[in-house]
Image (cartoon, rainbow over all chains, first blue to last red; front, top):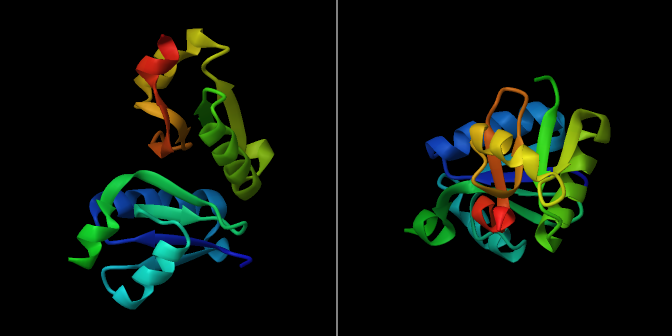
Length: 77
Length: 77
């Protein structure tokens, strides 16, 4: 994995964090995944260690949970 | 404020998040502040909205709390 992946679910906290991180890291360095709209990627996020959104998974595979928008359980619901 | 500021307290969660974010954002774009060693900057962090460490305050003034290492109350103690 050479890019970071930013998982979110469209909540206000997520959108704000997304803008901040994309500005800092650079839009071409981050893939944005909306788990509310692409629920088939929730399992992938869980496998990478994502427990809540918004979260950033770095190229070295670390899951950084940013503030707290929603748990993955809420996104599934 | 033109740089981001990364506040931490030396805990393992902090150090790991610091390395990840410095790699992503670039070392010259982030000031690193160890609140355990520079307690006189805790008030500054609180004023910027930091509630727990590690946290990244972006150039536009948003406090992004990364994972959860320790509350500021713990750092003060």
